[in-house]
Image 1 (cartoon, rainbow, N blue to C red):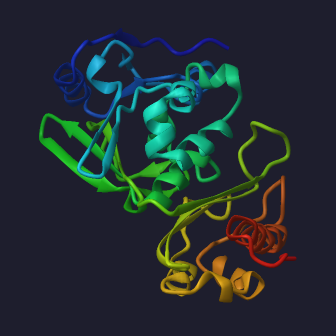
Image 2 (image 1 turned 135 degrees about the vertical axis):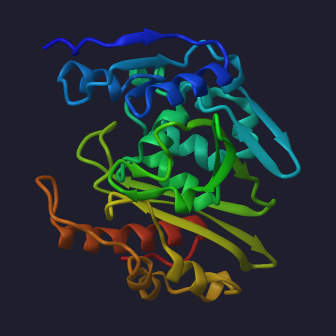
Length: 289
């Protein structure tokens, strides 16, 4: 099947994109990497009358660091994220999560901003943005604003982004020295979306957990911040932690569901084991179930 007819624009500035989005009145779609959009167009599941290609906008690319925050351009390709030396030093969890996104070929085109803006609940990058306490910067002809990642997602593919807004940057706070990273994904095949996924960071000082950021993917209709276990971990000495006891609390904020790939019960059971093992292996605790 071929896409429905549309007008194509390839602007070279953020201002021009914002103008086009405003004039389209909700009838435009942005083309970044196109890894999700192109199949949807071909199947006519998405039928915009204007397609705005944002690949020529240099301002949407690159990485900078300032005041303890990493600013990432949303048009950075996923393979560029993996290879970037600045991100390897400043945001190693983000790099690890990106290695699990799709396949090498798709990561050559897929962008970090496209994944975060799409809001797929089983995807790695939205959940990692939530876990790290990231925020997104968006622009429109009405001005700019920042949205915390944990407030960005309402449901599957439903976000706080308005139809006339363009994602212009991702701001990720840098965690202190001594932070350890958790990332586990259970998927049917490498490159698939996660059936159960855990991503997070624990900042350690003098053997205690000073800061915790943990989120799930594939465990509900959105990326889910594990608030209850985060609160339980704060201030705890790592040599007193009981991963099995904490595992029940770790999934307390999730909303597992049945689908053709796994049952809600499977997700709950595996989620607890994923958390216990991730915590145990990351902190070199006694073996977990």
